[in-house]
Amino acid sequence: MLKIGLIREGKTPSDNRVAITPAQCRWLHKNFPSIKVAAQHSSTRCFNDKEYEQAGVEVKEDLSDCGILLGIKEVPLDMLIPGKTYLFFSHTKKLQPHNQKLFKAILEKKITLIDYECLVHDDGQRVLGFGFFAGIVGAHNGMMAYGKRTGTFKLGPVHECKDYRTLIHTYFGLKIPNIKIAVTGSGRVAHGVLEVMNLMGITEVEPDEYLERKFSYPVYVQLKGADLYTHKETKTYKREHFHNNPTEYRSRFLPYTKCTDILMNGVYWDEHVPRLFETTDIDDTFSIQTIADITDDEHGSIPINLGDQTIGDPVYGVDKITFEKTGPFETNSIDVMAVGNLPNELPRDASQYFGEQLIKYVLEDLVKGNSALIDRAKIVKDGRVTKDFEYMKEYGGL
Image (cartoon, rainbow, N blue to C red):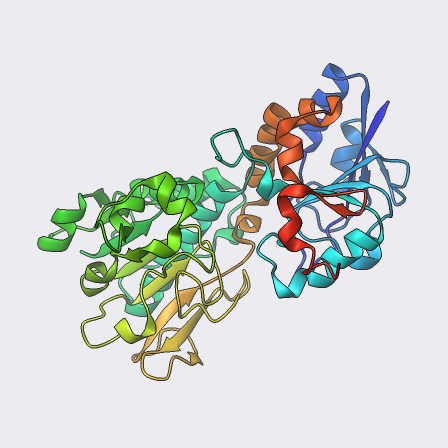
């Protein structure tokens, strides 16, 4: 019998999402008799303890009898159980300084860490993620911020909606002014953004049209890799080469900064990837008023991302001259929406989607073992850094 435990989220601010919903637990018990799911007591989950109990899940405090523990966000150090196998978003693979203590504790407690972010198909595409719902909420928040800034339309916060279906109804009759919106990326985040653009009745146009024409209705453009980056010497873009050699490329985004009102950013970024623009590009010709930095890397692809806000207060301003943080919606500032847990505004919908992917693509491999999919995502095994992640040894104090 394999016992899987759903841990209580302990990070502050609290996250309400779950890896597996009560209905999915009931399905697992019926279709996989060798699996038993238990849930740790929680007063903050989007599905409460009673819903899990009604689905046949044992709800208790001590999960030490569970071999595999599933969470969502980083686990507080004092909640880590030595010797267990954990699956959660550790946010350590980029050597993030704020999670270095967590990584060291995982090594010290001889834990096996399987990071959701590292679960990828053979072609490198991620298996799991909340990106689609991050895109939906991020796009909504970006539009909400622009509406507040300009007074041209009004949207309420996503978290005031019961679910995604309720959110959709808030777009009926919404009148958007004649603005231009640039959407960057082609993954789950971008797909979520495009969903909102289409629900709001905003028209998609091609990049050349977007740059050259004025429109009497709101439009958006989706900018993928070849639209955003070009090789410094050959002036071409090849996806695989770019991912392996990002420092050989430069950004092509600058022309869009001169005709865009809202930027919805959904591109992956690390320190080797060119930024979309630099602070030196922000001058009198820079027309972007609102940036929804959905992928949310501080000083990353958006150089004026100065750090996270919260779900309740998602937007801040950045002064165009000093680049210091200001209040939102000020005349001489650019508004930035940057929140690290956007899908938590639609926690039940996001959790259902995530759990479906987890069961469909990961669970069987996790149970049977000897899986290339799982091995690729295993950053630490029994307290030892695995071969593919040896660059993290110094980060872990080894």
